[in-house]
Length: 427
Ligand SMILES: *Cc1c(COP(=O)(O)O)cnc(C)c1O
Image (cartoon, rainbow, N blue to C red; front, side):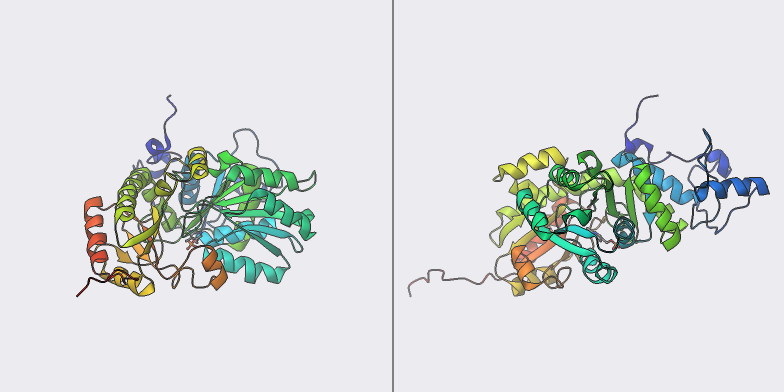
C-alpha cells in the first residue's frame, strides 16, 4: 500500500473497529480496569508491564488498568507518533506534567540543567523553584547567544561533567527568537560521555507537530502542551512527549508512578482534534502571513516579531528557518506605537479577537506579555527580550483573514499615538 501522509491516517490509524462492534469512531473507554480472560493472561500482562521479561515476537501487552494503559491513550499516542516520525509517545494531563516528568526522569541531585531563556513561565518556575529543592543546578542561555559563548560558560562553571539535560524552547515566546537545534544536538554530543549521554528535549508547542520536527534535527525528546495547537479548541488541558522507544520507556514508567497520564475522555477529544490538525494549522499560518503583512505596513505599529517579516532582512534567520521549519507559524508579536496605555487601548477595542492567554486555538487570542504571561520575568530579562509595555502577542486562529484584519484595523484606529516632537504647524 502507498505510504500515506499523517493527515490521511488521523481518522483510522491504530484503531480496529471489529474490537468495538464496528463503530467507525474509537469509543471513549471510560473504565478504570480491564478484565483478564484467565489468570495466566493476567500474569503475562504484568510480567511485561513491569519489565520482568521481554515480549515474545508479535506479543503485545494487554490492557490492565487505566493508569498503565487505556485504548484511547494508546491509539492517540500511535497517531501522534506519525507527525514527528517518533518511535513512541506518551500523553499527559497537561503540558507542564509532560515537561516536569521529563526533567525528573533525566536529572538527578547534583546534576546541571541547561535551559534556553525565555521559556514558558511554568517551565521557568519549575526549574528555578522545584528542581532547586532537589539539588538540581540551572544554567540559562539566551536564544541569541552563540554556541561558543554557551560552551565557554559551561566549561568555566566546573559543572559541565554533571550536565544531564538540555531543555530548549524554539521559537521563544513571545518574540519568536529562533534557536538552531542542530547546534544544540552538537553541544549535547560534545558533553556526552560513554557512561552518560546528555539528553536534549525541545518544547515544540509553538511550531509543532506540523511546522517543525525537532527529532529530525538531532533532539532526543520532543515535548508539547497539547492544550495548544494539538487540542486546538481551547477546551482541554493536555501534554505529550515523543522520542525513541528506549527513552520513552523511562518516561512512561515514571508516568505510571506519578499517575499524571491524561484521562480517556481527554484522549478521545485529542483524537478528534488530530483529524483537523493539518487543515487548522495551514489556515492559521496563511492568516498569520496576511495579518503580519498588514501590521508591518500600519503606521500605528512599530516592530513586528514574525519570522516571515524578520527573515527578509536577516539572512541567518532565513537560512535557519529554511533548514528547520516549514512555515513561519501563526504567532505574531508586535509593538503598538506608544506604550502600555496604547497597547491596552488596542486590546480593549478588539471585537472578534478575544483578550486571553493561551495560543494555537481556532479562535484568535491577544494578550499583553509584559503584564500577563511574562509578568514574572525579571525587569532585566524583559528588557533583554524586548518585552515592553507596547508589546502585544497575537495567536492567529482560523477565522476569515479579512474579518481579522478589519478587527485589528478598527482597534488600531482607537489608539491615539502620542506625537513625539512632531513639527507643529505655524499658527
Ligand atoms: C502552554 C505551554 C506550556 C504548558 O502547557 P499546559 O498544557 O498549560 O500545562 C508549556 N510550554 C509552552 C511553550 C506553552 O505554550
